[in-house]
Length: 370
Image (cartoon, rainbow, N blue to C red; front, side, top):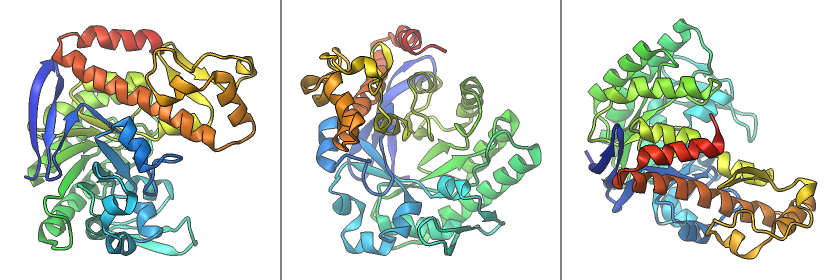
């Protein structure tokens, strides 16, 4: 195994600590901003340096299409290519392929490119090879993600194919020479909201042996309480000494509740997507700054926020930028929203360490509701 996990504090099933990697390490719990095409939208690597995430996610499907994995490799790999020298995790492309309504068979998936309309083929081996060329610190296996609700037969097939593909990915990854030394590979657990299928998928995935384990196929149409019940039913079957990653969750309540269930890391486009639509996260809850009521509001977005946006700009100015479609607004609001989410997750870790996680979780729920 290329990763080592050191748990330094617990609060019930919640845990805090650090993951040691070939690049150095990162603290858990951790939130990963999403840099779909090699950049977190509207931000650059210097912004990320200031924000301080220890991991960023990049999207395999989009990078293999434009500019192409071989181009990224020729330009020094994902870190040199993007100018971001912290940890990078690449997803397998499975979720994006799922959203394109592909033709799925036992060998892989065929889909139509969103860029040029041409048919493309992705197999577990190809996904590993592409991510090897991209050169991230952590890559993900190709899995089958099913939109919920789904029939038992559809979930059964997704679990079987995900397990088969995971074994093929692990075999190819182990044999590859064209990947960074120490690159980690994470397996993915599927099964919809069926606890027995989740248990089976976890056991089959763990039996293969991966550096970390993701809980996939959630936040795809099910209510939050059902999502959390599924996470609670899955985590006990994941190893204590491996990172646990809940894919695609980034709302405040979802984050703190999943941390409470023993999840270590997360990703979500939500904070930056909300920012581009003028919706911001604050200590008092959600604020839609594009609303006319803020036209002459001289206050910062959140007086308690330490970000550069809140230190310098008023709600009225930020509303003006949104109203005239000035892209600067996307950057300034994204900086704020990511500061909020990153600080929320870091504070969850501190609360675990200091023995006050339950009260912290209740405080987050009091702001954001159920």
